[in-house]
Length: 177
Image (cartoon, rainbow, N blue to C red; front, side, top):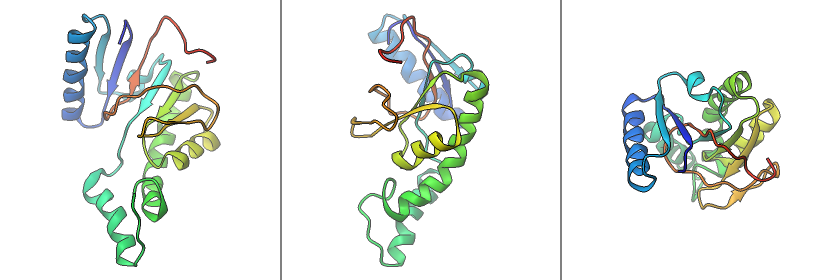
């Protein structure tokens, strides 16, 4: 965790508080409290000055949306093994998520235009493609299996699997970025 600043944002106050407590505890117990952990109620404030933004969201929640991603195709005889990345379920999820991600992009273009957007949300390829085509935000997708998806030759990065945007203020930059 080093001496980074982690700016946490979530639309759900309870999840934000839980993420804040968890990250603060990790910082205290494994990093001697060297990092700064701050929670924000306003996304623009959380993004302001960011060098890296990690996106981990699920638009619409598990119930009803993820369930619907499986049930509607099933109703019409379409079998899918993974409903959040491929097939019609992945398309449903992409259609819900793309507008939200493009809102993130608009905010980033205003307050942190040079930040690297690290996407950890499925459907990875569809969401990253939307970011590339509809925004100027430098974007890389990171697959949940920890294999980086190199869609624009950005460096491989690790991402915590929690539901918040994270801002890093580091004294160094990633090689090649």
